[in-house]
Length: 401
View 1 (cartoon, rainbow, N blue to C red):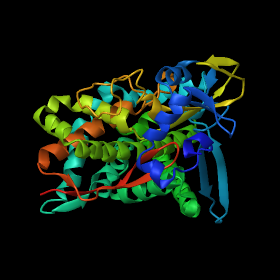
View 2: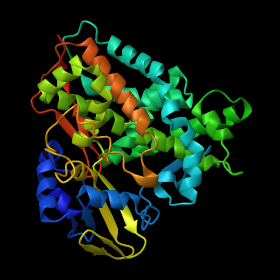
View 3: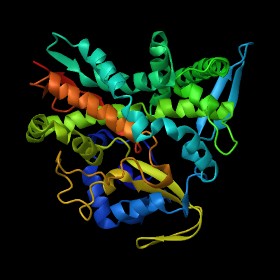
View 4: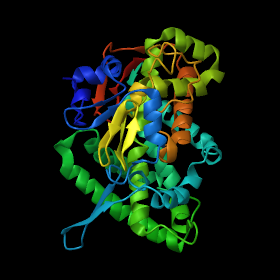
Protein backbone atom coordinates (compact mmCIF):
# COMPACT_ATOMS: atom_id res chain seq x y z
CA UNK A 1 0.00 0.00 0.00
CA UNK A 2 1.41 3.42 -0.93
CA UNK A 3 1.72 6.37 1.44
CA UNK A 4 -1.13 8.08 -0.40
CA UNK A 5 -3.53 5.14 -0.21
CA UNK A 6 -3.14 4.88 3.56
CA UNK A 7 -4.66 8.32 3.96
CA UNK A 8 -2.90 8.83 7.29
CA UNK A 9 -1.15 12.08 6.25
CA UNK A 10 2.18 10.72 7.46
CA UNK A 11 5.52 11.76 5.90
CA UNK A 12 6.20 10.31 2.48
CA UNK A 13 8.75 7.53 1.99
CA UNK A 14 11.97 8.56 0.24
CA UNK A 15 10.82 7.18 -3.11
CA UNK A 16 7.45 8.95 -2.86
CA UNK A 17 9.15 12.23 -2.00
CA UNK A 18 11.37 11.96 -5.05
CA UNK A 19 8.43 11.34 -7.40
CA UNK A 20 4.87 10.84 -6.11
CA UNK A 21 3.24 11.41 -9.49
CA UNK A 22 3.20 7.79 -10.77
CA UNK A 23 1.36 6.81 -7.58
CA UNK A 24 -1.11 9.68 -8.04
CA UNK A 25 -1.68 8.62 -11.65
CA UNK A 26 -2.28 4.97 -10.72
CA UNK A 27 -4.68 5.98 -7.95
CA UNK A 28 -6.63 8.35 -10.19
CA UNK A 29 -7.03 5.61 -12.79
CA UNK A 30 -8.65 3.45 -10.09
CA UNK A 31 -11.11 6.15 -9.13
CA UNK A 32 -11.24 9.93 -9.10
CA UNK A 33 -12.93 9.84 -5.67
CA UNK A 34 -12.18 6.87 -3.41
CA UNK A 35 -12.16 5.84 0.23
CA UNK A 36 -8.93 4.92 2.04
CA UNK A 37 -8.44 2.18 4.66
CA UNK A 38 -8.14 4.98 7.24
CA UNK A 39 -11.71 5.99 6.46
CA UNK A 40 -10.93 9.24 4.65
CA UNK A 41 -11.96 10.10 1.11
CA UNK A 42 -9.30 10.88 -1.49
CA UNK A 43 -10.17 13.19 -4.40
CA UNK A 44 -7.76 13.07 -7.34
CA UNK A 45 -9.52 14.46 -10.44
CA UNK A 46 -9.29 18.14 -11.35
CA UNK A 47 -13.04 18.79 -11.61
CA UNK A 48 -13.73 16.91 -8.39
CA UNK A 49 -10.98 18.73 -6.47
CA UNK A 50 -12.26 22.04 -7.82
CA UNK A 51 -15.73 21.21 -6.51
CA UNK A 52 -14.30 20.21 -3.13
CA UNK A 53 -12.56 23.59 -2.86
CA UNK A 54 -15.49 25.74 -3.94
CA UNK A 55 -18.63 23.93 -2.73
CA UNK A 56 -19.70 25.39 0.62
CA UNK A 57 -21.09 22.02 1.67
CA UNK A 58 -17.47 21.22 2.50
CA UNK A 59 -16.09 23.22 5.41
CA UNK A 60 -12.80 23.93 7.18
CA UNK A 61 -13.95 24.57 10.72
CA UNK A 62 -14.77 20.99 11.67
CA UNK A 63 -11.23 19.88 10.88
CA UNK A 64 -9.46 22.82 12.57
CA UNK A 65 -6.44 22.12 10.40
CA UNK A 66 -5.33 25.76 10.18
CA UNK A 67 -5.24 26.61 13.88
CA UNK A 68 -2.04 28.14 15.26
CA UNK A 69 -0.60 27.10 18.63
CA UNK A 70 0.45 30.13 20.68
CA UNK A 71 2.33 30.00 23.96
CA UNK A 72 4.50 32.22 26.15
CA UNK A 73 6.69 31.87 29.20
CA UNK A 74 5.50 33.80 32.23
CA UNK A 75 7.87 35.99 34.26
CA UNK A 76 8.33 33.24 36.88
CA UNK A 77 9.52 30.88 34.15
CA UNK A 78 6.32 28.87 34.00
CA UNK A 79 5.04 27.76 30.62
CA UNK A 80 1.70 29.34 29.71
CA UNK A 81 -0.24 27.87 26.80
CA UNK A 82 -2.41 30.53 25.21
CA UNK A 83 -4.13 27.82 23.24
CA UNK A 84 -4.70 27.12 19.59
CA UNK A 85 -5.95 30.25 17.91
CA UNK A 86 -8.27 30.10 14.95
CA UNK A 87 -6.91 31.69 11.78
CA UNK A 88 -8.66 32.27 8.50
CA UNK A 89 -7.50 28.79 7.41
CA UNK A 90 -9.49 27.09 10.18
CA UNK A 91 -12.66 29.15 9.95
CA UNK A 92 -15.78 29.12 7.84
CA UNK A 93 -17.90 32.22 7.11
CA UNK A 94 -18.76 34.59 8.66
CA UNK A 95 -15.61 34.60 10.85
CA UNK A 96 -13.41 33.62 7.90
CA UNK A 97 -14.83 36.50 5.88
CA UNK A 98 -14.13 39.02 8.65
CA UNK A 99 -10.53 37.87 9.22
CA UNK A 100 -9.68 37.66 5.53
CA UNK A 101 -11.05 41.11 4.75
CA UNK A 102 -9.04 42.64 7.58
CA UNK A 103 -5.78 41.13 6.31
CA UNK A 104 -6.25 40.90 2.55
CA UNK A 105 -5.63 44.54 1.68
CA UNK A 106 -1.89 44.01 2.13
CA UNK A 107 -1.92 41.13 -0.36
CA UNK A 108 -3.83 42.48 -3.34
CA UNK A 109 -1.95 42.15 -6.64
CA UNK A 110 -1.54 45.94 -6.77
CA UNK A 111 -0.14 46.12 -3.22
CA UNK A 112 2.19 43.20 -3.90
CA UNK A 113 3.53 44.68 -7.14
CA UNK A 114 4.71 47.70 -5.19
CA UNK A 115 7.06 45.31 -3.38
CA UNK A 116 8.92 44.28 -6.54
CA UNK A 117 11.86 46.70 -5.97
CA UNK A 118 12.22 45.48 -2.37
CA UNK A 119 12.14 41.81 -3.40
CA UNK A 120 14.66 42.49 -6.17
CA UNK A 121 16.93 44.20 -3.64
CA UNK A 122 16.73 41.20 -1.29
CA UNK A 123 17.45 38.73 -4.12
CA UNK A 124 20.40 40.83 -5.29
CA UNK A 125 21.77 40.93 -1.74
CA UNK A 126 21.44 37.15 -1.31
CA UNK A 127 23.01 36.37 -4.70
CA UNK A 128 25.74 38.95 -4.14
CA UNK A 129 27.33 36.57 -1.67
CA UNK A 130 27.85 34.04 -4.46
CA UNK A 131 30.25 36.20 -6.49
CA UNK A 132 33.29 34.23 -7.60
CA UNK A 133 31.97 30.89 -6.35
CA UNK A 134 31.82 27.97 -8.74
CA UNK A 135 29.08 26.14 -6.88
CA UNK A 136 26.37 26.82 -4.31
CA UNK A 137 23.27 25.33 -2.70
CA UNK A 138 20.25 27.14 -4.11
CA UNK A 139 18.06 26.24 -1.14
CA UNK A 140 20.20 27.57 1.71
CA UNK A 141 21.60 30.52 -0.23
CA UNK A 142 18.40 31.86 -1.82
CA UNK A 143 15.17 29.85 -1.72
CA UNK A 144 14.99 29.36 2.06
CA UNK A 145 15.98 32.85 3.35
CA UNK A 146 14.09 34.88 0.72
CA UNK A 147 10.44 34.45 1.82
CA UNK A 148 11.20 34.92 5.54
CA UNK A 149 13.07 38.15 4.85
CA UNK A 150 10.20 39.41 2.67
CA UNK A 151 7.60 38.67 5.36
CA UNK A 152 9.83 40.25 8.03
CA UNK A 153 10.12 43.39 5.90
CA UNK A 154 6.34 43.49 5.39
CA UNK A 155 5.75 43.17 9.13
CA UNK A 156 8.26 45.90 9.90
CA UNK A 157 10.82 43.68 11.63
CA UNK A 158 14.19 45.51 11.88
CA UNK A 159 17.04 44.15 9.80
CA UNK A 160 19.03 43.43 12.97
CA UNK A 161 16.33 40.97 14.10
CA UNK A 162 16.09 39.01 10.83
CA UNK A 163 18.32 36.24 12.16
CA UNK A 164 16.09 35.57 15.17
CA UNK A 165 12.98 35.78 13.04
CA UNK A 166 14.42 33.23 10.62
CA UNK A 167 15.39 30.86 13.46
CA UNK A 168 11.89 31.02 14.97
CA UNK A 169 10.31 30.38 11.59
CA UNK A 170 12.56 27.42 10.75
CA UNK A 171 11.86 25.73 14.09
CA UNK A 172 8.10 26.15 13.79
CA UNK A 173 8.00 25.01 10.17
CA UNK A 174 10.13 21.91 10.88
CA UNK A 175 7.32 20.30 12.86
CA UNK A 176 4.88 20.97 10.02
CA UNK A 177 7.31 19.23 7.68
CA UNK A 178 7.20 16.06 9.77
CA UNK A 179 10.32 16.62 11.90
CA UNK A 180 9.11 15.94 15.44
CA UNK A 181 12.62 15.62 16.89
CA UNK A 182 12.77 19.31 17.80
CA UNK A 183 9.41 19.98 19.45
CA UNK A 184 11.11 21.68 22.41
CA UNK A 185 12.91 24.07 20.07
CA UNK A 186 9.63 24.75 18.24
CA UNK A 187 7.92 25.53 21.55
CA UNK A 188 10.72 27.89 22.61
CA UNK A 189 10.62 29.59 19.23
CA UNK A 190 6.84 29.95 19.51
CA UNK A 191 7.18 31.57 22.93
CA UNK A 192 9.93 33.92 21.79
CA UNK A 193 7.95 34.88 18.68
CA UNK A 194 4.79 35.59 20.72
CA UNK A 195 6.75 37.71 23.21
CA UNK A 196 8.54 39.61 20.43
CA UNK A 197 5.43 40.28 18.32
CA UNK A 198 3.40 41.26 21.41
CA UNK A 199 5.99 43.97 22.10
CA UNK A 200 5.85 45.13 18.48
CA UNK A 201 2.03 45.29 18.59
CA UNK A 202 2.16 47.37 21.78
CA UNK A 203 4.72 49.68 20.16
CA UNK A 204 2.63 50.08 17.00
CA UNK A 205 -0.44 50.98 19.05
CA UNK A 206 1.53 53.96 20.40
CA UNK A 207 3.50 54.81 17.26
CA UNK A 208 2.07 53.38 14.01
CA UNK A 209 4.45 52.91 11.10
CA UNK A 210 4.11 52.02 7.44
CA UNK A 211 4.12 48.24 7.96
CA UNK A 212 1.72 45.32 8.09
CA UNK A 213 1.55 45.04 11.89
CA UNK A 214 0.53 48.69 12.10
CA UNK A 215 -2.17 48.05 9.51
CA UNK A 216 -3.39 44.99 11.45
CA UNK A 217 -3.61 47.10 14.61
CA UNK A 218 -5.59 49.77 12.75
CA UNK A 219 -7.62 47.41 10.58
CA UNK A 220 -11.36 47.64 10.90
CA UNK A 221 -14.20 46.04 8.97
CA UNK A 222 -17.86 46.77 9.82
CA UNK A 223 -16.82 48.13 13.21
CA UNK A 224 -14.77 45.06 14.16
CA UNK A 225 -11.05 44.86 14.83
CA UNK A 226 -8.59 42.02 15.26
CA UNK A 227 -8.03 40.89 18.83
CA UNK A 228 -4.43 40.57 19.99
CA UNK A 229 -4.64 36.76 19.77
CA UNK A 230 -5.96 37.08 16.22
CA UNK A 231 -3.08 39.40 15.33
CA UNK A 232 -0.57 37.01 16.87
CA UNK A 233 -2.16 34.10 15.02
CA UNK A 234 -2.14 36.02 11.75
CA UNK A 235 1.54 36.92 12.07
CA UNK A 236 2.42 33.29 12.90
CA UNK A 237 0.29 32.07 9.97
CA UNK A 238 1.98 34.45 7.54
CA UNK A 239 5.38 33.37 8.82
CA UNK A 240 4.65 29.65 8.55
CA UNK A 241 2.43 29.54 5.45
CA UNK A 242 4.59 31.91 3.40
CA UNK A 243 7.92 30.38 4.31
CA UNK A 244 8.31 26.76 3.27
CA UNK A 245 5.89 26.87 0.35
CA UNK A 246 7.55 29.79 -1.43
CA UNK A 247 11.00 28.34 -0.76
CA UNK A 248 9.90 25.08 -2.40
CA UNK A 249 8.42 26.96 -5.36
CA UNK A 250 11.82 28.52 -6.08
CA UNK A 251 13.92 25.38 -5.53
CA UNK A 252 11.58 22.82 -7.14
CA UNK A 253 10.81 25.23 -9.96
CA UNK A 254 14.50 25.67 -10.76
CA UNK A 255 14.96 21.91 -10.64
CA UNK A 256 12.20 21.52 -13.24
CA UNK A 257 13.99 24.00 -15.49
CA UNK A 258 17.37 22.31 -15.04
CA UNK A 259 15.87 18.92 -15.88
CA UNK A 260 14.23 20.38 -18.99
CA UNK A 261 17.09 22.35 -20.59
CA UNK A 262 15.13 23.11 -23.76
CA UNK A 263 12.48 24.83 -21.65
CA UNK A 264 15.12 26.76 -19.70
CA UNK A 265 16.70 27.87 -22.98
CA UNK A 266 13.33 29.06 -24.25
CA UNK A 267 12.72 31.03 -21.03
CA UNK A 268 16.12 32.69 -21.36
CA UNK A 269 15.26 33.68 -24.94
CA UNK A 270 11.74 34.82 -24.02
CA UNK A 271 11.81 36.29 -20.49
CA UNK A 272 8.26 37.56 -21.06
CA UNK A 273 7.22 33.93 -20.47
CA UNK A 274 8.34 34.13 -16.83
CA UNK A 275 4.83 34.58 -15.34
CA UNK A 276 3.60 31.61 -17.37
CA UNK A 277 6.66 29.59 -16.34
CA UNK A 278 6.00 30.22 -12.64
CA UNK A 279 2.43 28.99 -12.99
CA UNK A 280 3.66 25.94 -14.86
CA UNK A 281 6.07 25.21 -12.01
CA UNK A 282 3.15 25.46 -9.58
CA UNK A 283 1.08 23.09 -11.72
CA UNK A 284 3.87 20.65 -12.47
CA UNK A 285 5.68 20.50 -9.13
CA UNK A 286 3.74 22.71 -6.70
CA UNK A 287 4.74 22.53 -3.02
CA UNK A 288 1.28 21.99 -1.51
CA UNK A 289 0.04 18.51 -2.38
CA UNK A 290 -3.09 18.11 -0.29
CA UNK A 291 -5.85 19.97 1.46
CA UNK A 292 -8.59 18.62 3.64
CA UNK A 293 -12.23 19.47 4.21
CA UNK A 294 -15.08 18.04 6.26
CA UNK A 295 -18.50 17.40 4.71
CA UNK A 296 -21.03 19.67 6.42
CA UNK A 297 -23.89 17.64 4.98
CA UNK A 298 -24.35 14.63 2.70
CA UNK A 299 -22.71 15.37 -0.65
CA UNK A 300 -22.38 13.42 -3.88
CA UNK A 301 -18.95 14.05 -5.37
CA UNK A 302 -18.16 12.27 -8.60
CA UNK A 303 -19.39 8.72 -8.13
CA UNK A 304 -19.16 8.85 -4.33
CA UNK A 305 -21.77 9.57 -1.68
CA UNK A 306 -19.99 11.37 1.17
CA UNK A 307 -21.73 11.49 4.53
CA UNK A 308 -21.92 14.46 6.86
CA UNK A 309 -18.83 14.72 9.07
CA UNK A 310 -16.55 12.63 6.86
CA UNK A 311 -13.04 13.92 6.10
CA UNK A 312 -12.20 14.51 2.44
CA UNK A 313 -8.58 14.95 1.29
CA UNK A 314 -8.09 16.72 -2.02
CA UNK A 315 -4.86 15.76 -3.82
CA UNK A 316 -4.05 19.10 -5.46
CA UNK A 317 -0.90 17.75 -7.10
CA UNK A 318 -2.86 14.91 -8.73
CA UNK A 319 -5.54 17.30 -9.98
CA UNK A 320 -2.86 19.49 -11.54
CA UNK A 321 -1.71 16.55 -13.68
CA UNK A 322 -5.15 15.28 -14.64
CA UNK A 323 -5.07 14.40 -18.38
CA UNK A 324 -8.76 15.27 -18.65
CA UNK A 325 -7.79 18.85 -17.80
CA UNK A 326 -4.28 19.29 -19.24
CA UNK A 327 -2.87 17.88 -22.46
CA UNK A 328 0.29 15.84 -21.86
CA UNK A 329 0.20 16.78 -18.15
CA UNK A 330 3.52 15.14 -17.26
CA UNK A 331 5.36 17.42 -19.69
CA UNK A 332 6.83 20.66 -18.35
CA UNK A 333 6.10 23.58 -20.72
CA UNK A 334 6.96 27.15 -19.74
CA UNK A 335 4.49 28.57 -22.29
CA UNK A 336 1.51 26.48 -21.12
CA UNK A 337 0.10 29.43 -19.11
CA UNK A 338 -1.83 27.12 -16.77
CA UNK A 339 -3.22 29.86 -14.54
CA UNK A 340 -6.23 27.71 -13.63
CA UNK A 341 -4.18 25.17 -11.63
CA UNK A 342 -5.21 24.48 -8.03
CA UNK A 343 -1.76 24.76 -6.42
CA UNK A 344 -3.06 27.74 -4.42
CA UNK A 345 -6.40 26.10 -3.72
CA UNK A 346 -9.63 27.78 -4.84
CA UNK A 347 -12.79 29.27 -3.45
CA UNK A 348 -12.92 31.30 -0.24
CA UNK A 349 -9.68 29.72 1.03
CA UNK A 350 -7.67 30.54 -2.10
CA UNK A 351 -4.15 31.32 -0.88
CA UNK A 352 -4.01 34.90 0.34
CA UNK A 353 -0.30 35.12 -0.53
CA UNK A 354 -0.61 33.79 -4.10
CA UNK A 355 0.36 37.09 -5.76
CA UNK A 356 3.33 37.48 -3.39
CA UNK A 357 4.55 33.91 -3.98
CA UNK A 358 4.30 34.37 -7.75
CA UNK A 359 6.23 37.63 -7.58
CA UNK A 360 8.99 36.18 -5.37
CA UNK A 361 9.29 33.25 -7.77
CA UNK A 362 9.48 35.53 -10.81
CA UNK A 363 12.13 37.79 -9.30
CA UNK A 364 14.25 34.97 -7.84
CA UNK A 365 14.23 32.69 -10.88
CA UNK A 366 14.38 35.54 -13.40
CA UNK A 367 17.45 36.96 -11.65
CA UNK A 368 19.13 33.55 -11.47
CA UNK A 369 18.71 33.03 -15.20
CA UNK A 370 19.92 36.53 -16.02
CA UNK A 371 22.96 36.37 -13.72
CA UNK A 372 24.15 32.79 -14.35
CA UNK A 373 24.33 31.62 -17.96
CA UNK A 374 25.75 28.15 -17.29
CA UNK A 375 23.78 26.76 -14.36
CA UNK A 376 23.82 22.97 -14.09
CA UNK A 377 23.03 20.35 -11.49
CA UNK A 378 25.81 18.88 -9.37
CA UNK A 379 23.57 16.15 -7.92
CA UNK A 380 21.49 13.89 -10.13
CA UNK A 381 19.25 13.12 -7.16
CA UNK A 382 18.65 16.26 -5.07
CA UNK A 383 17.45 15.97 -1.48
CA UNK A 384 13.69 16.11 -0.94
CA UNK A 385 11.75 16.72 2.23
CA UNK A 386 8.16 17.04 3.31
CA UNK A 387 4.98 15.22 4.17
CA UNK A 388 1.77 14.09 2.56
CA UNK A 389 0.78 17.79 2.58
CA UNK A 390 3.91 19.75 1.56
CA UNK A 391 6.85 18.53 -0.52
CA UNK A 392 9.93 20.24 -1.90
CA UNK A 393 13.65 20.18 -2.59
CA UNK A 394 15.67 20.77 0.58
CA UNK A 395 19.16 20.77 -1.02
CA UNK A 396 20.00 21.66 -4.60
CA UNK A 397 23.71 22.05 -5.39
CA UNK A 398 24.40 23.95 -8.58
CA UNK A 399 27.49 24.66 -10.67
CA UNK A 400 27.41 28.30 -11.76
CA UNK A 401 30.50 28.83 -13.94
